[in-house]
Image (tube, rainbow, N blue to C red):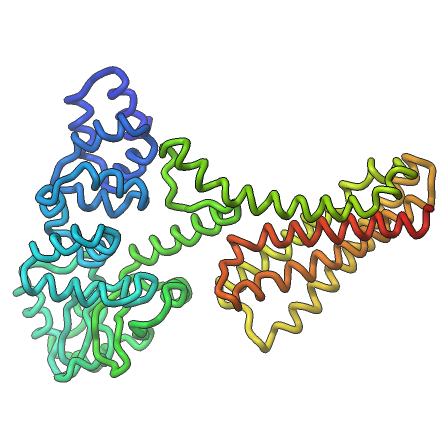
Amino acid sequence: MSSLHKLKNQLINGKIIASQNLLNNLHPSELARLIESLPLNERALIWEMIDKNIEGEVLVEVSDEVRDGLIEKMDTDELITAIDGMALDDLADLVADLPETLMQEVIKSMGHQDRERLEKVLAYDEDSAGGLMNTDILTVRPDVTVEVTLRYLRNQKAIPRDTDSIFVVNRKNEYRGTLLLSRILTEDPQTPVSEIISKKIFPISVDAPSENVVWEFENRDLVSAPVIDNENKLLGRITVDDVVDVIRDEAEHSLMSAAGLDEEEDMFSPATKSAKRRALWLGVNLITAFIAASVVDIFETTLDKIVLLAILMPIVPSMGGVAGTQSLTIMTRALALGHIDKSNLSGILKKEILVGIINGILWAVVVGGLTYLWFKDALIGTVIAGAMTINLIVAALAGFFIPITLKRFNIDPALAGGVVLTTITDVIGYMAFLGLGAIFLL
């Protein structure tokens, strides 16, 4: 049985003291998952039982909406105690989401040096390298030896968390390279630092978007990376734990946005609050459904005369929706990973059109054949086959162009792409099927 399941069972059985002991042996991220999985009343009880010294770390791990609810129950002094000793990057994430007045109170409570460092990080966009970085770093000069570097490290009161390397800078604090701790431990003590600098770790610009940071860590297998400004001066570092958080957030965003939801929504928030959020997207979907229905209405006479068309009508838009979603998903992912640019755009378009044609013809033959066997009417089979071919080709084109167009207008393709695609494949599917039916069957 996992620790979380064991804890829940103890709470159910009223074993408060045993629960508290187990609770405070959990990692902050485990506590965060536990809190998010509990209804509001039980959540408040658990929060009261958590050690005050780790409350800040738990607040960083929970979703925004859950965090807001927990902070509402904390007074300023309790919050200040909770954030004491937190890593700067985590502290910046937490403070940035606080109400303005509370944020100022927290900042005022900090020492001058810590306040200055925090304000520097808060000055950058939270979705940039500057917003992800921690200014708590170790640096050495290139002209010192390994022995001097080791002595310097031993004199430190504490090594910053997740330190796998120290950074080499000149007297102007300009970045010159990265020195891995593993090299320091294995090299001759008299070896100059300049001779063992790693050439594989490239600095990241402070203004680089978070997706670029993720790319660097993913493709260069980094544990940490230096962050520099436009003048090549070292500002801080980004560690892999922050990059994992970005990857997780992006994955949750893509999953929830596809349904028009906020990835930070609390599962146990009041029903009225959740209903209000979901109502907007349902309204948008209703509008698109009426657009599709209006196309069907145009061919009312055709449907009255040929009832068989009404039976077969859902097949064409349904197949188009699936084909379009496949293309849309591939394109949205490629855009997010930076795989698409002007040099390969036309080649990808040709491929998607070809896929649409191949699948259109293949499934047109299958559906046309099945329709003939079902209704013994070759003409209706031919009509649905033609409509299927048209809609699958259009679906492939829509799946290609929709994310590119939305991206150009700074609209998240994961959020709006599905609704736009469904509207197009429904409208074209109905129009192609009923239009061909009106032409050839009446």
